Amino acid sequence: MITLIVDSTVYITKKEASDLNIRIAPVTYYVKGQVYHEIYSDCNGDFINLLKTNQECKTSQTNVATFLSAFEEEIRKGNQVLCLTLSSRLSGTYSSASIAARELNTPNIIVVDSLLTAGGLFLLAKEAVKMINSGLSLEEIVPKLEKIRNEIMITFTVDDIMPLRRSGRLGIVRQSVGTILNNKPILKIVEGSVIHDGTARGKSEQLKKLSNKVPQNAQSVIIHYINDYSTAQKLAQAIKDNIPSVNVSIRLLGPVLGVHLGVGVIGLVWK
Image (cartoon, rainbow, N blue to C red; front, side, top):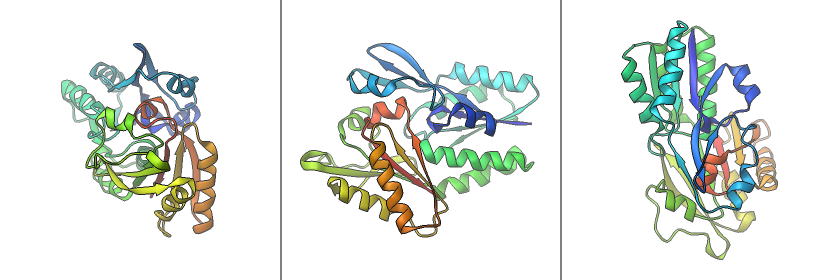
């Protein structure tokens, strides 16, 4: 049996994790020095208020010991392990998982850098679940996932660029990019890194530019939000108006990405 382990930025509920048979590796975040462990998307407490009322927030990659413990437990059960992590260019979590796998020195553990996060990681994890359930081997699954990850697109916009800039997660972004005068930066993930992809003036243009990015042949669309559900709903409707046949879902992000993106983030993922 292959056990799928995914870090918590996949943002699935506890029930979804159970239904999909996905094991979650928590990512750590800190608020005023207090340690918190992000887990299922519906089990992170009142993190929104916590982030809104505190500036002293930071995150830390899932450590080697967490992965080592999970890997050892699954190997003892006689299982193989497929581990998917958020992009190695956004976090050291992939490195931690890879170190843990090397320490155990077994071909029964494979770690894959998704080059994605959030809904992109979720879509990739669902593809992995399908392959596992179809009886494919670890060796057969990995190259297929590496191909699929390139077909998943992520774009997003934030109310305030400073949390992302302070985090050091920005890639090739002009230093002038900001959120002054109601300008909203539009960003995207390319090969695992965050880069600038334009600017929108106000909510109306923001929704139009985001919705127009989704191609007519998109199969699945995920809209992410933290504190702005109303805008997420409007974006979902705009996409449905453009592409009536596409499956659109709205999903809550969690505290780890909230620390870096701010609670006003709106994300868009499609495949």
